[in-house]
Length: 247
Image (cartoon, rainbow, N blue to C red; front, top):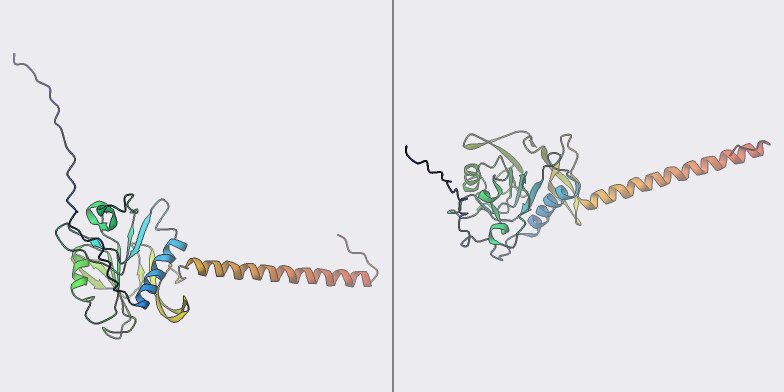
């Protein structure tokens, strides 16, 4: 009878790809003043006032951060991207944590937003194709100065291998909407791109929330003062009539 030999097959974890050649930052200032403010408006409002897509579901929103869809291809740098169910890398000073690496995060971003500043950026051509190949669910082009045409806001949704333009600005898969809002942000009144809820209510910045709370507190104080004056007037009227009001 032959001897049975027991053995254990050793299974090694796959070796992560070499990322030492990836360019995670180049220190080149490329943003114009409007784009810089617009990017902060879109990132700060979500972190200030949006609870996320659901309980226990984190999200990451960032501006001008390199997104690598392949270790062999150059990065693309969206003006804004939003990715659900991912967290900031713990070791964010290491190469693998400085950028959005799809193989580390496990999924592509859900939304990519490009802000048009000239007619040479390829927002409707090469960039759109890259985001489609990367399987980004929504691609948004904001053209505030109407450099590419009459339409200031264009929203695409991935269907199959390409994008189709959608008429609504509600991004159902991320439970957020986008809207054009004419108002003042950091001392400048113009048309801004804002996140919004299903009913169109804006996702507020921290400052807007503070101002809203302050206004609400002022209203409550004014209402309480009116009630106090009304009570004092009624007390005076009762006493003038020879009645002592009950305390």
